[in-house]
Image (cartoon, rainbow, N blue to C red; front, top):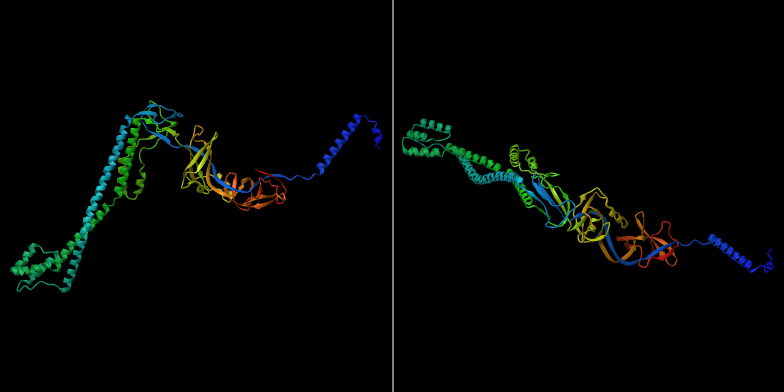
Length: 529
C-alpha cells in the first residue's frame, strides 16, 4: 500500500520525476482510449452553389496544318534546264526567280499540238456543213410533199368517179371503129398516148373536128389519169426517199463528237502553248513561301519523276459509238490523225505559301450542324496557342473509316457519339501564324460554337452518369446530409452544363462525389468558392 508519509522524505527531484511520469502515463492512457472509442469524422467534400450564368459551348478536335495555297510548277519532258536557283527548304519571296529554261526543243511538239487542233477543226467544220446542207434540203422536201399528196388524192378520186360513170369515146359517125378500138387497146396496154398514136388516130377519124373530140376524150379518160397518177406517185416516193436520206444526214451525232474532239484538241494546244510560254519566261514565285520539292537539275533535260499525259483522254468517245461500225470507224480515224501530240510533263518545283495557314479536319453528322463559317477558334501547337476562325464548312460528306472521338462527349447531354462512316471536311484559318506553326503537323483545335446567357449553370464535376441518367448529390446545410437526385442537362461547355431541370438556384451540389457516397450520408462540406 502506497504510503503518502514516505513521499515527504523524497527529494524535490524525485517528486518532479514521479509527477511528470504520472502525467505522461495518464496522457498515453487517454490517447489509447480516444483512439479506440472516438467517432468517425464525416468525409470532407467541396460543394458548389447553383446560380445563373452563361454557357459557351466548344467543339474540340485535332487537325493537320496545311498551306493556304500550294504553287506547283510544271515542266515538259525534254525541255533544257538552264538554271535552278533554289533548293528544298529555302524560303522565297514573291517575285524571286526560281529557274530558267531553253524551250527550243519543244517547238516540234508545239507544232504537233497545233496541227492536231487544225485537223480536228476541219473535220468538225465539214461535218457541221453537211448537217446544215441536209437541214436545208429537208426543209424544201417537207414543203413539196403535202402539195403532191393532195394532187395524188385528187387524181385517185377522179379515176374512181370516171370508172363508176362508165366513160367512153364520143360518137365518130361512119369511122373505122375496129381500128380505133385496136389503137385504144394499145394505148391502154402501154399506159399512155404518144404523139405518133395521136397522129394515127387523127388519120382514122379523117376530120380535124373529130380528132379534137377524140383527143379531148382520150386526155380525160381513165387511162390518161391513171398514167398521171402513177407519175405523181413516183414523184412522191422519190421525195419521201429523199426525206429519209436528209433525216439521216441531219443527225448531228457525228458532228457533236467531232466538236468534242476539236474542243479537246484546242484545250490541249492552248495549255501546251501556255506551258511553253511560262518556261520561256522562267519561273518566278507568286508569293512568299518555302520550297518543298525540286525535281530539276541545271544543264540537263527535264525528265519527270511521275509522268502526266499532255493530251485529253478521248477513249470514252469510242465506247459511246461502239454499236455503230461506220461512226466508230470515222471517229477512230479522226482520233488517230490527231493523237500525235502528247508530250509528257511533270512537277518541277513546289512552293508552299505562308501567306495563310489552315488546319483541316473532319466532323461527323452530329457535330457538323454546330459549326459555321466565322466562328472563333483557337489552335494549339506544341509551343503556343493561336487565334483562329472557321473559314470553311463543307455542305457534303465524304466517306471515311474513322471514329470522330470528339463527338463522344455529347453522350453526357443525351446526344450520341458519331460512329458514322461519313464525315464532312472543315477548315480553320490561323490568323497570325509564325514559324512555330509547321505545315503537316497535327495541332489541337477548339471552336466556340453556341453561347447562351442567364441560365442555371451546373459544374461538370458534380455530375455522375449511370445507365444513361445524369445524377448529382444535393447537400442540405441544416442536416449536413446529401441526397441523390437526377437532373436534365442542356448545352455543355468545358467545365459546366446548362441545367434544365432537377435543381433550383441556391441549392448546393457535391463536387467530385466518390462512388461510396450514398443517399443520407453526412459530409463535411467545404465551399468551392
